Length: 121
Image (cartoon, rainbow, N blue to C red; front, side, top):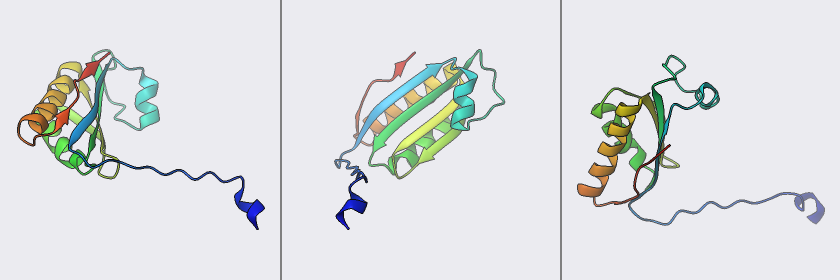
């Protein structure tokens, strides 16, 4: 009976309670294959487009971040997960950067979160 469980791997994911944005990155002009593999809006001008990705805890914060992002400008909400705290937005480079900045500023200044800086490549 012990042999049937020997080849199985158990993975435990744990998050530490805290109010923080742990990752915020903007990818300017990503390759079209990235949009396709992530299931994002294929009707974009890839030359001036961007993908913004953000992760936060508590994970339900992704709902608030998504609301702020889509209300801050002309961005498309590609993905929001209240279980992992991940949000992905797409749009023009300037719109994505502006939306990410709005989210980070609100979480830091109004909600008292610890935030990371927004990186861009």
